[in-house]
Image 1 (cartoon, rainbow, N blue to C red):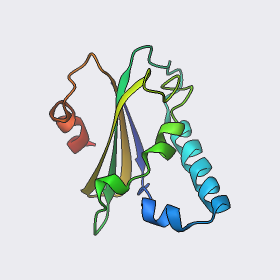
Image 2: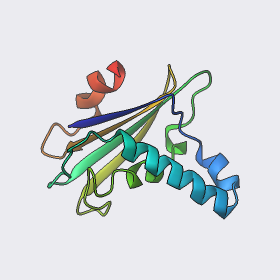
Image 3: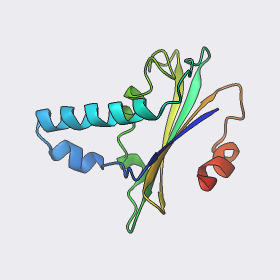
Image 4: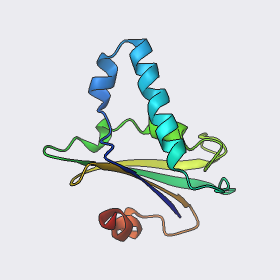
Length: 128
């Protein structure tokens, strides 16, 4: 399993992103993509097997709905570095979660042959 932590990064909500004009929305997508790519450890090889991806947003104050986290922006930063493609051939599931805490975003990528239920991720998600 690969865990990437983006310190200080509170994911913007889909509601904010949908209110942006297309140029600002594209700029936001590119900024998140580059940020994620910059935190992928050097020498990481893309997973060869199908993976599950979990994106966990930590928010200071009021947390967001888990479904309001724009997973696609974060996944695009993994393309070619952690996963070959974001098609169902390579990505079985994407889960987004929201918690209160020190602002950060945690991205977990794990092969499907590892334990598959979120409870298997709980120790990792709650400790980072």
